[in-house]
Image 1 (cartoon, rainbow, N blue to C red):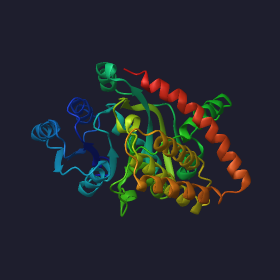
Image 2 (cartoon, rainbow, N blue to C red):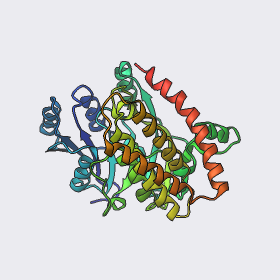
Image 3 (cartoon, one colour):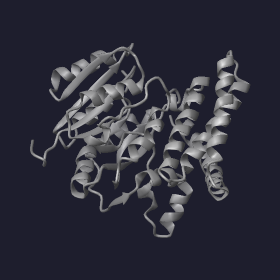
Length: 347
């Protein structure tokens, strides 16, 4: 296969998304870069999503549909990875919209810099903006005037996560925003080999957080594109914004703990996972104490274990490192309150 036109596999886990799925798939099929393999993994949907997937496969040979019993997003992503034939891998959530130049610009950045992963910027939007965002994405982003490559992405992930500090960096002429990225897998393009022997843990929430350190530690260089290439739908009923159960809290703690230790093993201070660890244990304790549903002995035992795990991990930091992490925790906690208010106001 000619290296100038490599195959790109886009993996889309699908679950009960009949309302938004067509917007997502259309935005993928209408990419300016056309040598695509679109893998729709129907994870046991109960609505009309399976038939929507099949209809797209019938009319476009680039679409592959896999129907499987419900096993969660991690299982669906793993199925997609096991199926993919592309030299490059991308992911999309089934209710989001890709800019029509998403793959073209991300691939161009990878090929020109030799980076392991390229990433773009994203924009959040509410349901009432669907038609507007669909049109905006179809127009395609303008070719960015700047791309930024940087090394040691695990360090960047762990340290550059407070919005206010990124703004401050920009004011002082630093390209800090280019170093920022979260653990989400969308709005990225990966070299296929990064995923060799690497798969998401099954049966847990926060599967992307668990993957962060193992994945980013494999990368030498990441390239950032200063352009909005992905539109992230905000829904109050989504797992991210509404799921509050003992298992959800516990999984968030264990995910942060796993990455905390893995990052320390790389000689990097896990500031971001410090925030996740402290915030999630507080959420877990507060949630169990105020729960209107039955809380089991196992839930209380998980909290006990999580608190001990957090204490043990944090004590591995030096006093100066703990102070630095705590300062960033306070700052991020304040930013999250503003962020949550903004998201819940989106219609």
